[in-house]
Length: 85
Ligand SMILES: [Zn+2]
Image (tube, rainbow, N blue to C red; front, top):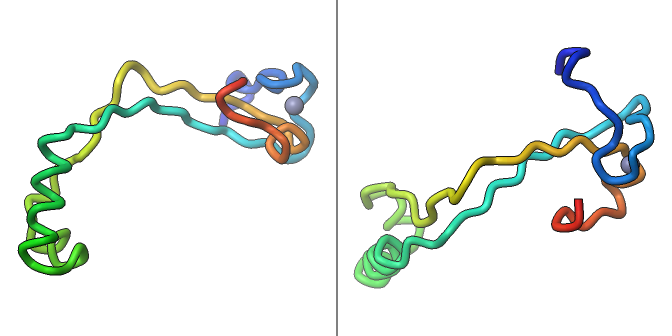
């Protein structure tokens, strides 16, 4: 990170300290049709690993909205529930 990207901890508001964490949070929605295709191929081939290797390698979730980056100090990272940042 560049110096201009640094800011206080997004959880506690204190300085980040010597060790900090940049956490990217994305919300995804399951694409049920793609998930069913993936499961179906796994069942047909009898192996999830084989289905992943031979299948279309399509996404089974789609990102909803924009990713959010959070900066956390070490203490908060050890205790945080990311949903409450
Ligand atoms: Zn903190």
